[in-house]
Image 1 (cartoon, one colour):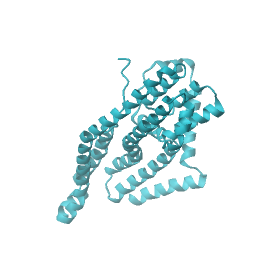
Image 2: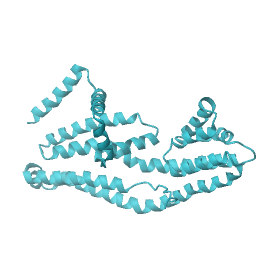
Image 3: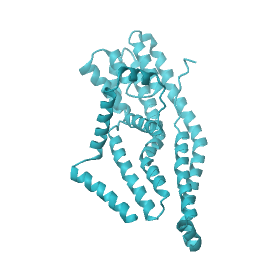
Image 4: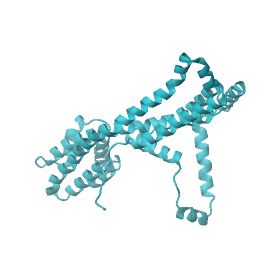
Length: 315
């Protein structure tokens, strides 16, 4: 059975190579077919679908959240690479299950490993957003200080401090300066465009305050209290790390112990090891453990989230 499966995988790869296909072309073909299906729908069907409440699927939500994180990181092109990496990990999962001769483990390893690249991006989201908040605090602080000094304009304040800003915040303000000088001379319109570059409520609130300052310069003192919210957010984030990360470390230790029990059994008692990996019950237990690891990882990533500012004006 192993040889047949390997032959099937090699045949699929050979067909792709002979036809000159790539994962990108397959994905684009599927998208074009879906667009044609959407066009062929009647107006009544379109209205009915628009009124119906659609629940976002798990994979759709995972892909959307991954794209949002990559957009904030200014790495949107990486998503296609993640798709290819997911396909490779899917094949690795199938081959690994076949190598240990465990049919039950095939779907678990294939699905779990194929989602691993997206889980990794979501797991690193917390650290990136923490660094983003720290850089926002520094950048908005120095720009606000320059803006409040004398009769300095906001454009002048940004240009004065632009060499000292760090990515990804510097890209946002560089785009703002480019828009003002080469696209639109309207500062308010350029500020509105800049506000969409970062999904950060404090940053959006600060930009809205800057827009108001364009008509009334007496509102400049309202900018610094908004920047201080980032300092408060950083303090709360440090406190939450002491609460969230110890359980995360315990989870990682438990996963390592669960995986490590197999080689430990091999060294301690080979009869027990053979019962675990050679019987149907043992293979089922290994599959349940692997599924538990992957499912629990989704909950861990879901709950280990960065602290974000919530606007409660509408409450």
